[in-house]
Amino acid sequence: MLGALLAVGGSPWLVRTLRRRRRLGAVAAADRVEGAWEEFRDLVWDAGWEWPTGSVRESGRHLAERLPDGADAAIKELATWVERSRYADSLGTVPALTDQVTTVRDALARTRRSGRVPWREVLPRSIWKRFRWSRGA
Image 1 (cartoon, rainbow, N blue to C red):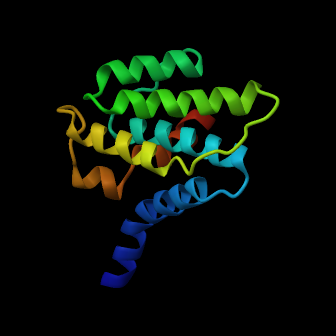
Image 2 (image 1 turned 180 degrees about the vertical axis):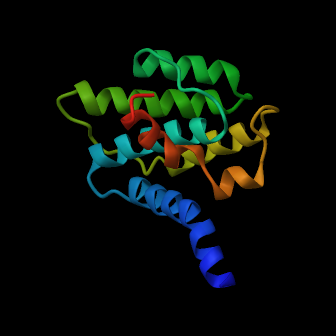
Image 3 (image 1 turned 90 degrees about the horizontal axis):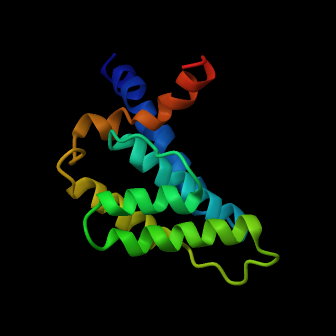
């Protein structure tokens, strides 16, 4: 019984963890870039923030202004790679981008509004947003 409760209660965390690994472990450069941006978006959502409207650059700039120092460079680099992957003829050599995502995650955890809240780790908002959006919310 306890095992079943733990399995059900931990499954959103597990889904989120597996999604993160898939995104950041993508082999194709364009998939890795988009995966890092999707992970960034989900981190913002999981922290209790809303994703800003606008282009990649505008969204990145808006969020960089709200996060502690150090995250702005990581966000700008992520945004630049996303723009290149979407609009450039060639990407060239793309870094793993895990360091940039980790920097953003740590910056979000340091903000007063989001902090490290245990239930946000176990029941991340990003798991449910697609369901909510698909229902017309």
